[in-house]
Length: 319
Image 1: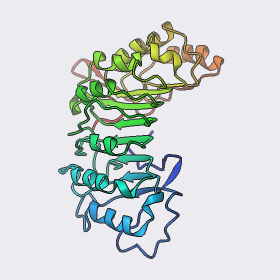
Image 2: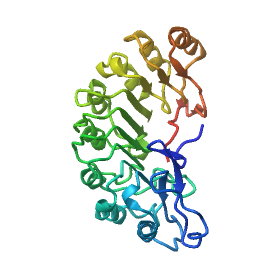
Image 3: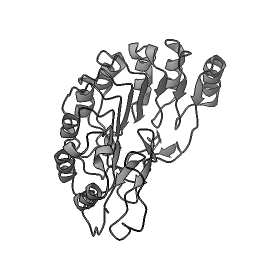
């Protein structure tokens, strides 16, 4: 199982990388509304800044028809945040009336490890693009987002190796009446993931998320606690998919899921990258697959280490 790879799709559109300066003119450009446009510089030794690439993009493409933008690497992302990128996007909002999807920080590990990505305050993007339906961000270092209201947002994704409790609380306090899909990579305390169960519980109640149908609370080193709370959480009863993957999920949390409210209404339960024993996996299959639930129990790269008399287990994405 691989993680933090370049997006291949956004808003139902295939991602197309806007060509570099030396390639522009030699690479045919698709129609403006036919693809999601990936705009990127280089993290190391950039010859062109992200904002310079964006300026070329706005000159070459009919931006009034652009529906999705994927912000890739920017110069020295391991040391510099995206403030100038956010300013450039906000300044261009009048040229992007059709923009419906935006992802900030689409970098693979070779460009910048997820916990090295410097982020910033992404609130201005949500405030200045009220028609956005999908928003995502990768990287938790320096990430800021106050509680907000957005009437059109249907999908929100935050991918980190460590998501601060403050961000989790602020997201839980946000009014998102149209949100159907929420995906939070909570991460590990070693990389700033300091959330406690109390920070996540408002999401599991779902009071401000009346249309939520797809919930992912994953990549967490408190995955057992989250699974135990989810077992009887009000929001789960109206979900189509529940994703508790990529974290330190053991038989404790897995058993709680089986002992709680029925999950047979789900279309999918994703528990991949787990530390579940084979007997419990079989119980999950017997209970849920027989009811038509798609179940992902792939252990993946979830490896246990014995050291100093203790068993150490790890989330899928930390650094």
